[in-house]
Length: 321
Image 1 (cartoon, rainbow, N blue to C red):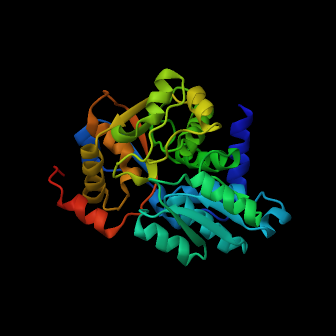
Image 2 (cartoon, rainbow, N blue to C red; image 1 turned 45 degrees about the vertical axis):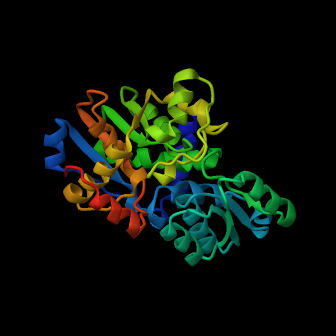
């Protein structure tokens, strides 16, 4: 059992009275469609609507009193922004969030409702890390990045830890990948609990930086990808998450926008729950039929924060359900 998994177990103890232990759902009709036994870990029911709350809380709660007193800052297209804002509210810490002007309205509104100060930036002309660093230099904030932070990774690893406790042994674990925090944390847990489990990271074809990086062992970047899965628009894996993905993840795969849209619809019509496009990437991987995946398959539904306009456009899209 490696040291990182020990840190994930420590994170689970740190979070146990704060995070929701999200449900694991199954669908007989989906099992029949795909010829497998599929289990869905529903982080769309997590606080702030996504898995991001786990890592955010695990990172912020370990800051020193001085760091907390200076306030915290992050940059995010939405789910991490909401998570940091909620953690700040719970712990009475001032929070600032740097968000792209085209961030989903529901995610921006939620961050503001939790009390965060939202700073807009234009992703076409500005770099969010530079915007945040300028604010840190001026105000002394403590940065809690969205994924490239070991305490973030360990917090996210509690998702798979819970998943295996409930679903037991899984032959395959399909995990959405943006910056790699959820993927690397989940893979660490999976490989320490059931080493035979094949961990597969999933990202959109339009945002395939992690897949290119995984296959070439060289860090690739895809800037401002125009995918509907806004949670995966991160330009690249991080300096911490990239080596962890290389070490613990078995495969990477990509899915089309059509696959993602159909997956959101299938989850709605078969499981009767709403997930955002990024959250549906695991089921999209099954829909892509790129691999013959069978046995006991675990899918992490990473979040459920979706704009009404996006959901309406998905429902209007002509795919099978």
